[in-house]
Length: 150
Image 1 (tube, one colour):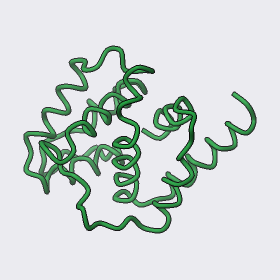
Image 2 (cartoon, helix red, strand yellow):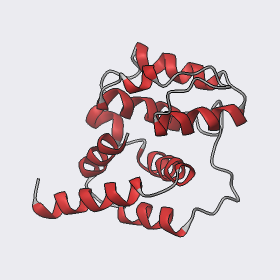
Image 3 (cartoon, one colour):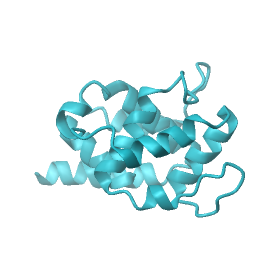
Image 4 (cartoon, helix red, strand yellow):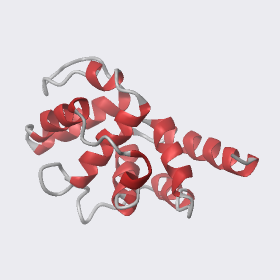
């Protein structure tokens, strides 16, 4: 990996982590839906696996408002079980590839069994900046970014 790639990744990760939770969820949704056709061939050979499929199914079984709450909790790795009944322990125990697969599976179901970003939603300026920064022709850099932030 070149120093340019490292700098790109460091800057991208830093900007992403400075976003609030909803902006981070928006960035993930937008990026995953843009590149979902390219990810499996690179790194998702074992998708779905039991761990990721089970957690996706738990999210899918929630009402949409609770899905959003549960996704916020998972992204923040908030340990309280709370209203959704979903614990973050299962997610926290996943390795980077499993987390990548989990979010990929969610993206595959956006707008059907998983709550989607509303059509009229306008991402914040900071979220848009992160998405723009991550429009890279190198899909492997983007996969590395996902593994670092999930």
